[in-house]
Image 1: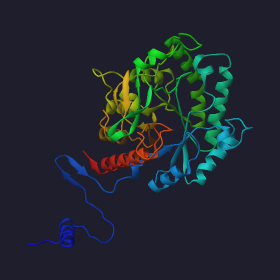
Image 2 (image 1 turned 180 degrees about the horizontal axis):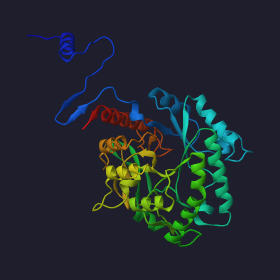
Image 3 (image 1 turned 180 degrees about the vertical axis):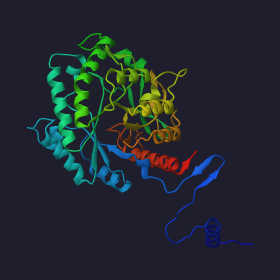
Length: 378
């Protein structure tokens, strides 16, 4: 008997108790330990964001609105606000930047790469107390404007580092990565000489003791990003935030719910080695139970800390569905963004890791994971 598609759909709707007209409401179904629940919370209650490190990009903001990704992650600098004579931490600058995002229909949720946290503070040089005081003023003025999350790092002199930015990955997409052998061959010790990890930890403790009480007072969430790459040293500058244990130590320096982390999955995934990789869901669960995860960079890699390359979200070493399940399990509702996507055909590689088309792929993948986790609880 020939069954037409229209009749098949209508009969299927009758069998499952659905009406083809009107909203679809599915009952809970339990089978083999799988519970499908409806309705589910949009994006699991998390705040999807995109990063804008070069100011407002109107094409990207238009796409963001169309994808219903309404959060922005941005630096704070007077020149971005068009107020070059103002201090970077002034309320006027913060208001101008916040309002510029609001005109685009977006909410500035995270300040990433804050001013007044530089070499003086991280290396304990003359002038660090003034730098820290300016950072505290920044926190106060951000709080007055309703912005409560700061993503910062502890990588002085040499920050994010890659030894290649245009390796061909899947289908010819361009990816970035790191090979410690290439770094060692060409880069000399910096002007600061060989420094010790103990100095870096001492300076981090000094910073936290000064700023965390003020973060508590103003309701600011400090979210420390892992060192990237998580190697022991680059050009004589130690990298100390390179492992799960290092984050545990950092949190113990000043226990507070305002002293937390940016859980950058790609950085955590590149920690360790092939014999002892980081268990990403286990790490999320550990820090989540301590309420220490304030911000998430959702990305992936293949390889380890000495030799890795960044990947599309669906081809790296991490079980991304399990990671998303765990964020949901710990009740994470904070800002989350894709990071370091491959540059895809049709896009320029002038901003490696931030291809517009690659970002669209990433958001679709992330939102699919969120919906899958929201609808299916094992």
